[in-house]
Image 1 (tube, rainbow over the protein chains, first blue to last red):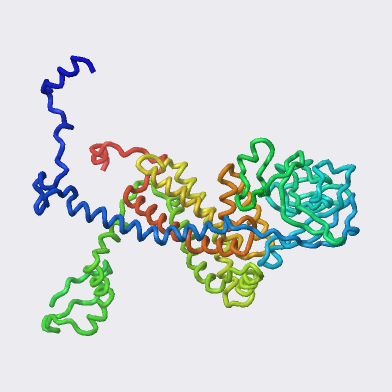
Image 2 (cartoon, each protein chain N blue to C red):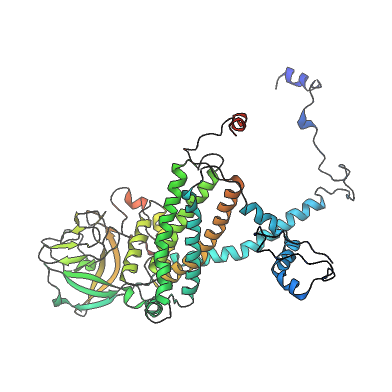
Length: 234
Length: 269
């Protein structure tokens, strides 16, 4: 602030400033009939705001619960279960045995799915060896769009009937549209019996990731572009 | 009390009733006259209290441009396909059970094989859905190739595109309801196609399935979307679509030449 600024304050502007014609915030000053001293909101305006707020509360009281109800199942925790599929000597280490487990309880046959199981073979299995992978359990759900793949023994390939996805013995893609290898399941051995646990996804290096849906790549940026479900993240 | 009478239809004089002879009756209406005018009276009674006839006239008696042809009926055809879906769908819903552990398939089997005319009504709904999708595309093509989407009809085009998407949603959700192998696997594939959208795709799949896996809620969720949510939106948007058609009028086909100078036209006549 310089001296000239202080001087200019004293000069009345030649053109009327529209902002200077500010209406008083008091209804009495604005000569509104029936106005009270010190009243700043007209009754009409108060009623308008009040009835709109009441309508908003009434609408929200059924919209918000309904919306939460509709999207609630997404955040439901899925129980971690183990399902026994057979004795350890039932599964060779160079070929898959199809087993059927319940993937979704409560919907009968539609909730069951085929899982291909074999014993871990150190000569070919290069992924991390720990107590969860003494047996390799590979899903029959194609990583393209979820059709059921079938293990073809003679070709040593998993083949998908829908769009021609082909996978090798380790479940890695060798042809067709799939974007990642076939998903796997955790396995464990309890009293000589093989049990199958929850599903996990693998990238093309067979590194483990939280389970993703088919069609979602997890190599490179894919793991960020297609986030896993919060309730299933590990 | 004398009532306004409708003008006589333009019948040949031989077919017209002879006017009452002088001295016949005293102007009072006989019960037969009342019965004859019952329909008019009812319509009058409603119209006097609603003024609906003005709206009906505004909707029905519009000027249409020269050159209007059969291509302009595709929109109405689509609407009748929708009405067919709505009516047959309501009656199918009286038999359908959205039960994933066998009940859904069984109820569809029951409708198809045992209910009187069940196969026919289900067939109308099943094939009618394909007819509706085809008609929607033909109607869209007509609008596009005739340039009927241009100012001031852009909003109607936008509403039409939303209607197309909703129609596709109906096809997608309805496909699951028979709950046979084809329905199940087509829905698995369809939901996973939704999931391939980056960032929001996985959440969209979860919303459609009602969870991480295709489960017990998926079928009832699809059923509710198919018969409550989307039909309501469709009906409301068809209303808006029709209102704009009546408000803005239809376009002439692009090959229609502009009207000549009115003076020249009079000279021609």
